[in-house]
Length: 424
Image 1 (tube, rainbow, N blue to C red):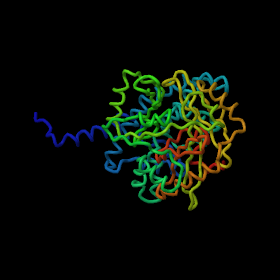
Image 2: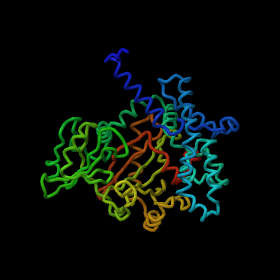
Image 3: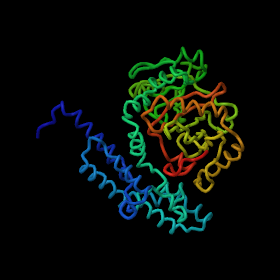
Image 4: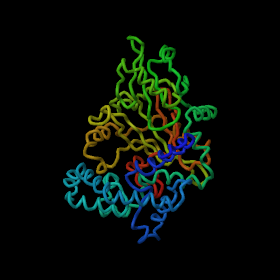
């Protein structure tokens, strides 16, 4: 048997990575597969989901092959994952829903499983959006589901033109920072760029700042990010992963070596929280405000906003996670999520936040509202962008923008994205 020629290895590796990404790592089909596509195809909302599903195909994959791959994913979902995920979801939610609404767990299981098998709705989505209730079935198609996110954003931006160049610019945090700074927007300055493979020297910057925040040039959700804090013990600093795990001094060199292989790194000053919000957090991390702007009626408008609050959370990775509050787009008022949409293991956390939120508003809301709109004006070919801000004692600072922003939290807080736009 002849070995594969060396020049073909890169192509083979790309094919393997693509197959893993598109098939092996996916628990369900790309896009929703629903019986309503046959029996209710005249419904405008069903039509929108069908259009979203058609946008899920990768441009380089022929339609017949895509149908085969997606069909295999759907078969795996209905024969295995849908049952397992439903069982797990009912194990978590069943007792609470039964006590609160009088719906027995066997009936919950059948309803949730029916949504999973007939419409490819994830069981946790069905609970968080309360779709197990017959009265809420009419809202089924107002939601965008996780398996539709990429296609949803892609479909909407294509109506404005070719968004690829703008999306690439948004993902490059150095280029984005320079662009927005040139437009006079208050961004977080980049103190130093450490190219991939080079050593990061924190000492000069720790003489000016007690803590530093280091993140990759590309990427989202703070993957690979870490904090550096000045100490009195050699080497003069310590590292905490942003997710919360502390890096032992003897492991710091190995940790930084892994980071050097990952991407270019950007070093920034760590930002403190605004005093009007600081008590909401129970973990020493920055509170972030996400504002989602959207092209609508020939202008850019703020569509949704949410506050991500770091809180202690036993059982989560590093024993902390983000909790979320809705932000009214008209006046910046904080609102807790619907009480009956909170999972059993989240009740204590959100009860505390609801009592603290009270009548609070986002500090400098009119200013940060207008900053998000001004930032989106630089990207006329992208339909919707999620902008992340940190509200500091000296004013809001813009961190970054994202095009493929997650849809779960906004919909959990405010309702389906395909319903009429919220009024704040």
